[in-house]
Amino acid sequence: MISRFFSFVIITLSLLSGVVLFAYVYQYPESAFPIQSHTQETKMERLRSAPGKILSSFSLIPQFNKEQTFFSVVIENHDDARPYHEGIEDAVLVQEFLVEGFISRFVATFDTRRIPKEIGPVRSLRPYFLDSIAPWSRTVFHAGGSPEALKRVTEGSHFFARNLLYFDDEHNSLRKDGPPAPHDLFLNKALIQKFLVEVPESLIHPVEWPAYKLGMPEGGEKAESVRINFFNVLHNVLFTFQPLSQKYERKNGTEISPARPSTIVILEVPIDNIGEYGRLFMTLNGRGKAQVFHSGKMWNAHWSRSSFTEPFRITDEVGEELPFAMGQIWMTVLPTLERVSWE
Image 1 (cartoon, rainbow, N blue to C red):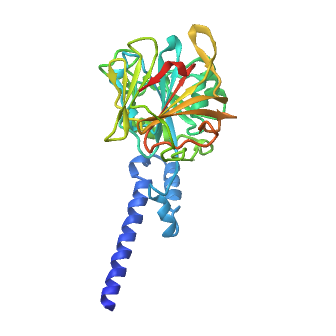
Image 2 (tube, rainbow, N blue to C red):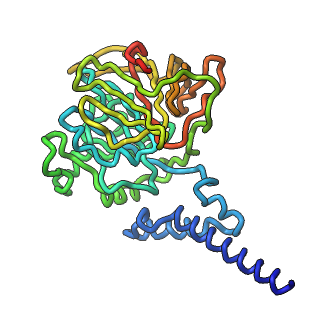
Image 3 (cartoon, helix red, strand yellow):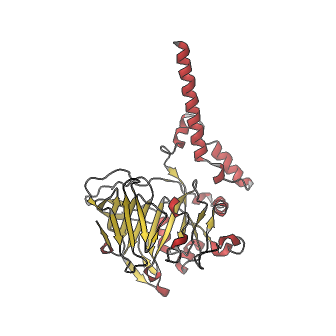
């Protein structure tokens, strides 16, 4: 009996050690921190000494560790670019905005521990993109931008930005054969890792993720297909719920996206004005109407926030936080919810 007890203890301790080791490796994979400099080695030493006590290592297990760091990439959504989308399926959050010509463009946010092999096509920055990502990410990759957006990232101290147009000659692999210009600029994993090492510590911005409560809200209307009207067959969007995966297929024009969001959030945000070259301006602070779709249902909601550093608060019609489904979040910003229909 005693020998059985000791055998049980030994097996339990072995399993516990294995779990802790797995959790540690999962949290700090070597590929995410390639040793390239003495500074980076110092960072690695600090990371390796962080767990300390065995029990504290349980926080490294993905289910228990909610604090993560992110980076964002501006991705083109012109109909010529869509067939070449790369990496968007690995984003934890995709935010979709109208730009000039009322074509939409994406800002995709990624976990620094799970960097896709390639992301793109990378396109230009707008100031409201910065407002949208600030609660989650202070690191953004783009290719050019409006004067207002470029001024914010070059003269301000809130963001670490890399304008890839300045690195195109040095890293000629950024241009990819196949996609038509200017939709041929792509970020690769090695370059992302190189840039992430350069992010100042003051802008390493860990946040809890998922940022929204998870679960199934009460009520809701059946909504197994969701349509967004962009008034052009090349740009209209259809989300179709897939019951087996509990995710949505996204069809944009004739192209089916590699992204498979679990939750779709649509925010109604008026366009403040249209500036030079048709550039749009909008305010992402305040309060407005929203709709949330997941699990084949729709809930009417409201969004609110008082500063660009706060996450969007999504609440139901009585002011309670609306739970989301686990998985990728797709957030579309439109000037009116009248463009949205479902069945």
